[in-house]
Length: 160
Image 1 (cartoon, rainbow, N blue to C red):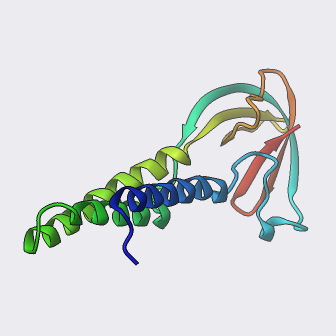
Image 2: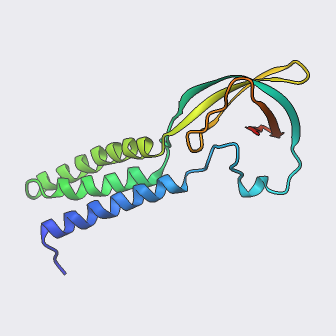
Image 3: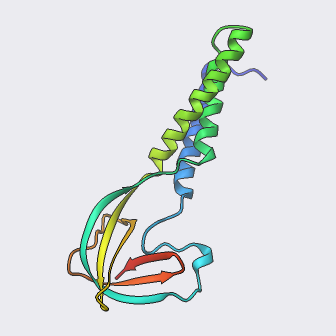
């Protein structure tokens, strides 16, 4: 079955847009209230402290995802294959796939970028720690707030 170029292009672009949206949803949460399945029902160490500072930061998006790279490569390859004829079309398809993969990777990185905060806490034992975690609903911690530091293995989070 042969599709008209406009229909095919719209279908491919729609598929890529949906894949990028879904990849953004699939990225792991980095808030203080987000737990992986393997973290559930595990004992954590609890320490109490006071917030000394909360600084807004940006948590970079994924740069290793195959969704953005793959989708971009497919679109770039298809777009490139429409240029020229014969060997020229094949070369354009390869170049289009490479360029599309790079563009798709950048789009996925931007789509999965998160607003974070670096929270510095003085614990009740006098120790000072800093943790970066995702901000949820623009709810930044404030200086002077009493918080709990939850830690298990190498994973730590700050919660109320």
